[in-house]
Amino acid sequence: MTAPPAFEKPQISRRIAMVAHDNKKVELLRWAEFNAGQLRHHQLSATGTTGTMLQYELGLKVHCFLSGPLGGDQQIGAKIAEGAIDVVIFFWDPLEPQPHDPDVKALLRLATLWNVPVATNVATADMIISSPLMTGSYIPARPNMERPSTGAEYNASTTT
Image 1: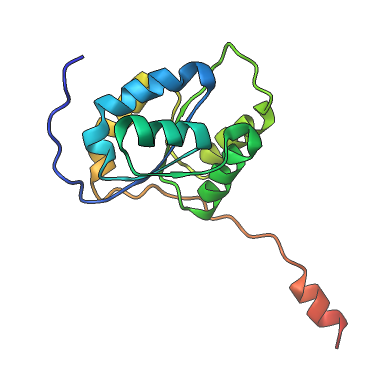
Image 2 (image 1 turned 30 degrees about the vertical axis):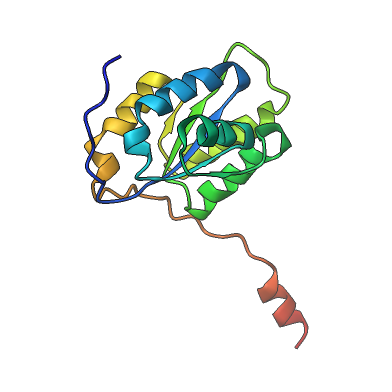
């Protein structure tokens, strides 16, 4: 691999969540090292072990959620639903069953539902990080979802 070109500070700082299963952590670390100059200009978050690895190995500033199996995948999913994550880099291991597979599926479902780009391998991550849309003024459309009622309307009407 040749070193990426020097990047100017992006016009927009994206909120990037990074996750890697155990057998993919080294691959994510290599990818992040290659793209560290670009990643430094964005707001990074990650599941616990992955985030700690990125902080100590590359000196990146990363907000760490819990470890994936302890709820970190769900925490990232919640941030996606809140509109607080713009991109997910998720190097998952398709050959190794995970004890938290339902959480992984939920995270990927939420990213798809809320129109958040997801890279599940190096090639896709390279395409996303190098896209001019990543540093431009592009704002992806989010679906207009009706929020379910909290019951407040029902409670107010029955107490009068």
